[in-house]
Image 1 (cartoon, rainbow, N blue to C red):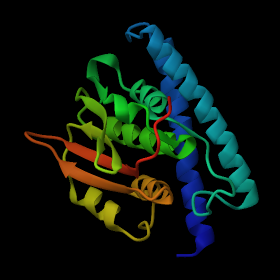
Image 2 (image 1 turned 180 degrees about the vertical axis):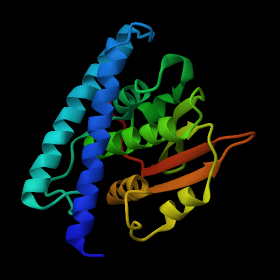
Image 3 (image 1 turned 45 degrees about the vertical axis):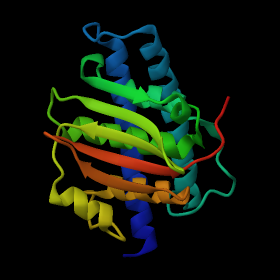
Image 4 (image 1 turned 90 degrees about the horizontal axis):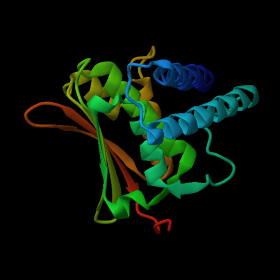
Length: 216
């Protein structure tokens, strides 16, 4: 597959995610039936700002002919994981949301843009592919020398998911492309993306990142 063709597909997919996210955010903020706390509204507003900035970055990448396939010229700013978790969790309606992070994990610095991009992508996938009324979870803890972030839903681990996590290059079309992009972003920081079956039902996608010094 030519790099130019893959780059175009990646950019098309990555445009779709923030546009879909911004659409969901505006609906959530306008929906009077959805219970939103003050923290939720702040998190949604912050995520909307960050997704708009991501769109601007994608436009620059498209103009320059770069993107997820080209390493960033400068190191990405690091922020505490807690803020990004709040933003990603705010995409899930309160009644369906499960979120928990240990204090140590919440204070871990992570690359701001890439981590947000990965978690928003995974949460959107969980909302799209899990049961309509099922719970979606975000959990973070420290495992040895790694930061572990789980995004869970009550769907199942299908063959398509496992294939998407193993492919060295994405298949033709858009199927599985989001997971392939997430793998590339996580690998940029020396991490990995894994899938786990949950009991009695459900699937967890685990982002593993090398530990860095906590942000205080």
